[in-house]
Length: 184
Image (cartoon, rainbow, N blue to C red; front, side):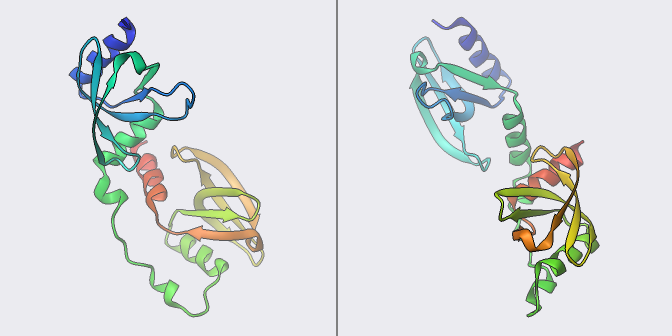
């Protein structure tokens, strides 16, 4: 019997809250997320939710195979926010008109992001990626107000335009960060 785990399973079931169930002690980074449907002294049944916030099926496991659970952590709170805003996070948005310009480059994208107050994700050749709003664009450099993936302001950064590998204009991660910023 696992009295604390059982107590927590009952609590999340009664409050219809997400939890993370860890069942593979060899790979602690592997887990399942979902809502407890039912449980007893031997088994737990969970309505699983995938990382995109969508239903992923129902599974039943032995209570004895559970070595840990997480509740109300940052990952679960972000997943709940995503689930409440699925239409926003996965909206099909049209490509900005400037992308059809035959002479497009990173500097033009940065300038457009600045003028449209669009958060972007910039990835560099040095295995670095940042999210932010463009503050300034020069001939060789640009400046961003940087935010982390939790929507928390993380300072100002300046980088060389020539070091940019790619720019994401509007994707799931950017939409989630914007939701987290709006929530604050």
